[in-house]
Amino acid sequence: MKKAVLLYNPCSGKGRIGRNTETICTVFRAYGYDISPQPIDFGRNPFEGNEQVDLLVVAGGDGTVNYAVNAMKSKDLDIPIGVIPAGTANDFAGALGMSHEPLEAARQIASGREERVDCGRVNGLYFVNIFSFGLFTTTSQRTPDHRKHRIGKLAYLIEGVKEVRTMHAVPLEIVADGEKFDFNSLMVLIFNGETAGGFRLARRSSVKDGLFDCVLLEKKNLLRSTLAMGRYLLGGNPKIVRQLRARRIEIRSTIDEPTDVDGQKGAGFPLHVECLAGGLRVVCQPQ
Image 1 (cartoon, rainbow, N blue to C red):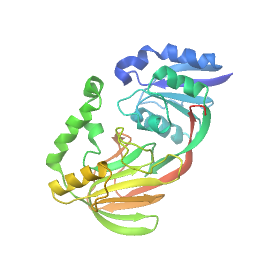
Image 2: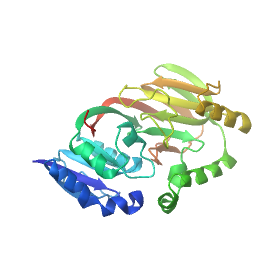
Image 3: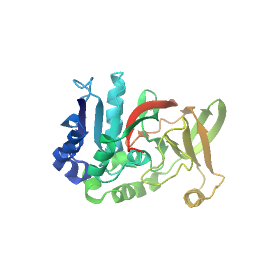
Image 4: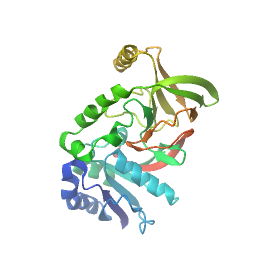
């Protein structure tokens, strides 16, 4: 019998996952899994004592998945992960095609197929969806959990509006797959996944292509920068929004700007960002 662990965030989905762990486990048991639920403890490695499991099922948002992946990599393990979307942001689960309904997502995993997808690494920190810095990108870190649980994604918008008042440029020296250039940035998004907050900002991004898709917003005056980002979101290609694809990116700056990995605190400058093609085993819905 295959052994699995259901790692869940009791706070995710307004507590819905915590109330339905046994129902979710019943789905896996019907497919032949010996599965045990385990609430996440961010001060403990969930793989401690679970080094031999056949599957880790993560029920939570991108931050919970990020924690599980970094915990696994820290022990040099390569265990398949299944994701049940249950957080405020579920972009990585969306890239895997997982249902937003927890029980259906459980069925997709229990009856699914294993694949290898890309993951990112920045200065030793792994990320599954996005590494970012600049305007709006650390909003998730500063948004109180109780507000996320109460009003969902609107909480990010409220917190993000505050950032406009402190908008500033970050001077960068970038080397992307050997191409070197300087850039006065307002925002930098480096996608391994496909969306951020449900928005497909990286138009060609895929978790299976071995490349990052990057969106860089150049600092101009407030009006011009805002209009340019608006045009980009509507499908345009304004000059001050630079797009590039790369496997390895080196970034230096005279400013130690805060960074973000999957909604969590990121690495400090200088930055070495690399895409690890096929670096993560996941279980997706059956074909």
